[in-house]
Length: 191
Image 1 (cartoon, rainbow, N blue to C red):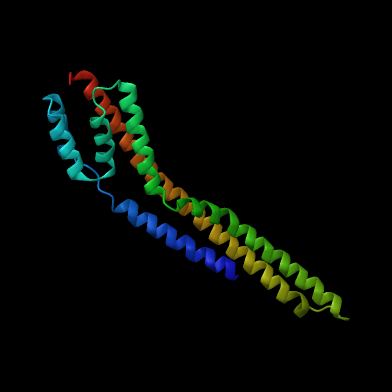
Image 2 (cartoon, rainbow, N blue to C red):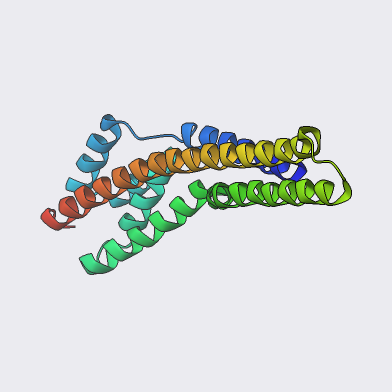
């Protein structure tokens, strides 16, 4: 039960750490993109870079990478923006991986408790001359509690992991959408 308790504390910590981190990240407004598009259309690349750097968020850092590579082939610009996006996504993921690990390990630890409970039952039976329900009940209790707790922690960690992952995926899809719009803009603008 001690390892299961430790895993539950770690899972709760990781979930709330990533939840509040993702929630606290700034997203750019439509007005920002209108101003950025206008600056790019008029050829004011340095002003566009300054605008993005002043925003200091993941979306703007990806756009800065694209703006700083203007003049290179579109494929290179896209590749640079994609690499920056992967770095940003890595920051957002943090320790989320461990939630997936906990989702898999907690039920296994519960099953180890099940085996321990069964061993306890048979050990008590081997020592006794007369089999009674009290000999079996202690092992059954241990078996059921550890299995149940392990499964519960695993299920909660699994749900938490996929919830956070879906939020991150939405952010990444937004970045990809904005990157495609940026590439379309510079492709249609002679800079």
